[in-house]
Image 1: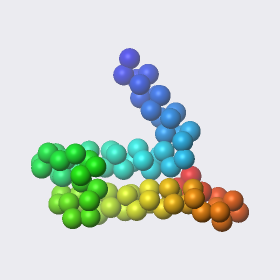
Image 2: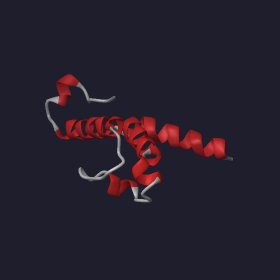
Image 3: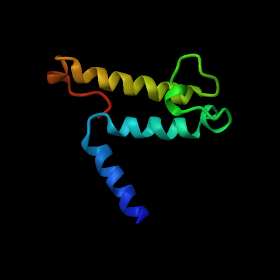
Length: 84
């Protein structure tokens, strides 16, 4: 039954805008020291001053931000969405 849930998550991540980046950010934060060692919530680890979040997660966070921002930008009608 776990494989069915994983397939639903994969399909949902593909269907929604920036879903792949959201999934990657979630996995990165759950694997970070901020969550594992310090016991903080992933949303608390997104803070700029949070310790234990590596540079890789920060880059994925920025890419996710840019993807969400591109959804509001009217120029994307010509250029396409970022991170798609």
